[in-house]
Image (tube, rainbow, N blue to C red; front, side, top):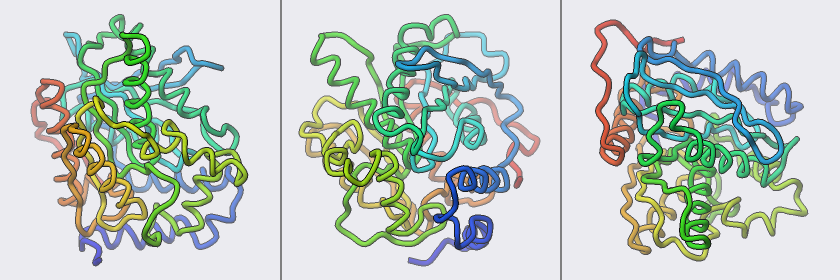
Length: 332
């Protein structure tokens, strides 16, 4: 599939920034390059959105997070829990601040961006435990921060989409077990990685990697190659391994047409539909994995992100912030 012309230069420059030896570098160097790439292809956060650093109680240690809200928000706001991408071992709320602040602008909701523990230092279930711990904090304490916990959604890109789907599964399971628990209204997933083994060969694309690097991500998150088999069967690790998809929150899935994990999005959409869960799938033809980085200069990426935010607005009954006349987004 041909790359969209507006994104071709992005893909070429990304290859240069990462370098051919990226996968062989120590994790600290991989993170340095990833952070530099995110900064290079970013824009200043929206001026009418403010963020606050928070430390939430976690299962083992405090979970750092960033709460993004409209400036001068004077009412209780619905909240979107956002989990950043990066293969469960890269990224932070800061690397995704452009996207999360724009999500606030385009939905009118608050966004809590979670800095979960990452592999290889912290294998599964650390990231999942932190992701679910952040949900519990929102439900138990979010009201004090102006959050309307009766209107709650989960979202994330790539590995973050995996965590969002896993949290939705776990919340449903807790409700079934105890009769009460966190109620999630909607899941908005951006090219999520939802299974360990795929039917089709992995396609090389910037930011998504080769077959070996995808395997490295999974192996790191699993805690080693000897643990991958059991890991791949755990639905909180790989949500498509679940045996039952009924009674999950409605979903909007934004997939990339040129992507190693495209079939994950397609399979999840088909599985939810078969379980009578309302679901919409949008596949962005010509866009690669990580197109979220390009919403400030690629019209097709911007339209895909707009559609995802529109689905969130409808689910959470919100209104986008007023349009700004100055340029909110500009190439970084």
